[in-house]
Length: 458
Ligand code: FAD
Ligand code: FO1
Image (cartoon, rainbow, N blue to C red; front, side, top):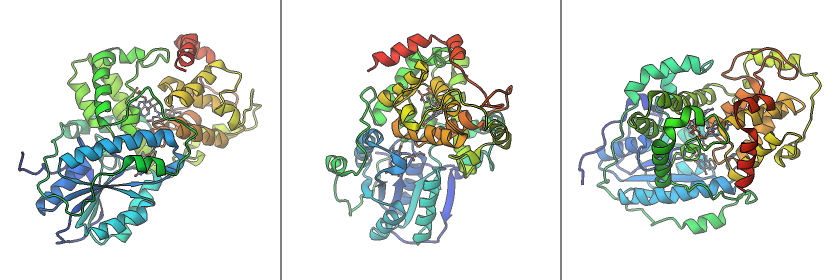
């Protein structure tokens, strides 16, 4: 058993919400939220290091919030299964685990007080609701409260102090900082001091049946939740898919994507672990570069967008050139106009778009290329960009396993509002926004093969 504490976490990952000199001896509480894993987790490693200094127990608390941003049973089933596995791993490390229920702004400070926590640590998340939770918790606590960016390889607050225009402005900043932050992870050692307040394992079956949530959207069967399954999916991707990724990932009819987004969204796997293993895979440089462009640049660009743009989920978050051109074409006749119910029922005149919507409803994950086409057609067939963005986000977050994620808000804003994109030649409805068409798709991949693939997955 290693009797040494984990090494200090790079200070650039830490963001202090409350610095309070505290000689309290109580346990350290890691309020886990975005990064729901026991390994490769900088927030957990920091909490353990602080607890070790104080010879104090380490307690991990997850606050379960019913109907979080409209989440339905499909996402909760995936998340709860992952949390149950994480609880077991934490207990094997002699760390406490507690499931709180309700509004974190109340439940976290209440629990911290109850266990006389000497410090509270949490993980980073740029979403508005998470910022509000952390602000409220910080005001209510009387002990130090620190946030750790365990999700990004280059911590978002450190990568850039402002909203970036696009991948081309953030990429050089990330590339300069990657050698510092793309490192291997220390394994969390077994914690020497047990928490005496532990009430034993969570009754996850009781949690599942008691959870107040919309169960109309069922779980999906093609993917297994949890850190161990995420690790297996990563291995399969490295061995069988990474080499062909540059071409295969752009063909919706092929199985060329990593399928890691649900694990990354729920923090069941670390993007840093994925990038580290990609770098060590020996795959051709072009394949590594193509995949890391998405995993590192595009994903961290989304966190940057949500961190610095308070309107990340509304048209006010669009760049001014896009707002102007969309307004110039507000009066253009729409070739088709569909209410949300028709979109949701995959009931449009376009068989390709209907297949993408069907893939989302049934599989809980539209292919990357098709998500762009899917959202851009919602813009074309809605009465205005505001309605289009609302429809895209609502459907995305109801059916996608990886929904309610900065990647989704940035993806919808890119498709509908030109965020992180540039102006193109002007046309009806889209103005200078990038256009995508059925014929354009036909020239890029076998549309019928994709439609068949979606139908056959039924
Ligand atoms: P891979 O190609 O294997 O990529 C690996 C990882 O890289 C992804 O898991 C993701 O973390 C990152 N990545 C890949 N493409 C992008 C991208 N365009 N932007 C940001 N990160 C990216 N992603 C979500 O995680 N949740 C969403 O709700 C979501 N909604 C989207 C909505 C629209 C309209 C668009 C255009 C994109 C959306 N994306 C979303 C981004 C992207 O489509 C998905 O991350 C990707 O399809 C996930 O599948 P994968 O992990 O198999 O992809
Ligand atoms: N985070 C929490 O701290 N508590 C929850 O109960 C919770 C539920 C939840 C359901 C669906 C979903 O997609 C995300 C959920 N999250 C929850 C947030 C999640 O951990 C991520 O932090 C963000 O959604 C991505 O930034």
